Image 1: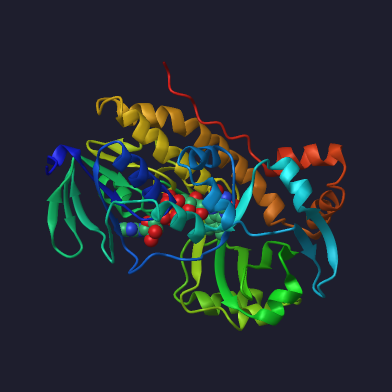
Image 2: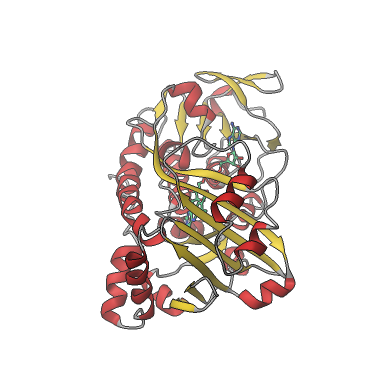
Length: 382
Ligand SMILES: Cc1cc2nc3c(=O)[nH]c(=O)nc-3n(C[C@H](O)[C@H](O)[C@H](O)COP(=O)(O)OP(=O)(O)OC[C@H]3O[C@@H](n4cnc5c(N)ncnc54)[C@H](O)[C@@H]3O)c2cc1C
């Protein structure tokens, strides 16, 4: 029997937050449609460390075995100098000790595991043009009415812009880029180790992924939050003077490289009428905090749980449970900038010494406080 509009949910964005929202909502009886701006599913992407509250949500969804299958066997994080010599290293076992239960995998692999367990349709190449509470006009000109609209369209959310207007984006002073490419020789040389070259305010890192492929990450400080017209040219001019394997990486940057400013989203209220935001759209913590995917999954699950107790007040209860964890992680992320993109040679040396001593329990606990936020999502008030 067709459901009434009140039971129809629109999820905007087929990323981690959107797919997880759709997963929980469809199991709660909602008739869900997902729309995604990209023309097809976004594969690959960058490597993420997945643990904390999202890991627990994935366990409840029964997805941990599939995630484990996609785990990247990263054995260490190594800081190298311009000639590729090791300056400091933190082993995977030391990292595991500070970040319990961590699964390193590609963002696209995490998203695909959720998508593969979803029954709801995903309409690619589609976005929203206008939203009037539950009444939505799509980019193809069609219109429909929904009882619930979930904005899960990431840090530059169109839903947020349409419904809440003013921007709530806090720029953290850096630009980042990530891409993958195939190079079996280089892949063998680098291995399953995250290797990075850091100079003040700039970092370039890479690691082997699988089947002779590599993934690269670049990060640099910039006073401007404006995105460049030509990201590839910008990366070449910003990193062209660096040694190690940087010239090889710069020679294979694809035209469709993932390139963005590093930002957080901070807004006082995450919902209006029938519209609610999840994931980066309302609470991006940034790559410096490294918990965004985990919080996106936790938020999606908490939202569906609160809706199961009735629509009235569900969005406020969801926000009250999630926002403290998001704000705590954002604060942590701002402090972590100094670890990931140190501002001086001296700071880089201190970090690399900490890596070198990471086998010692006392240093390990210091590192734990510096690299892993304690993220706790509030339990439902009984
Ligand atoms: C380099 C890097 C490293 C990171 N490392 C980690 C890590 O180690 N651990 C961790 O937990 N997190 C990490 N993160 C953060 C994490 O990737 C994000 O927080 C997480 O992906 C947020 O999920 P989301 O679904 O809210 O947004 P996204 O994953 O950005 O998904 C949003 C989706 O919406 C789509 N979309 C955008 N606009 C529209 C529109 N107008 N209409 C329709 N669809 C739209 C997008 O195409 C995308 O599919 C990292 C991020 C970066 C950039």
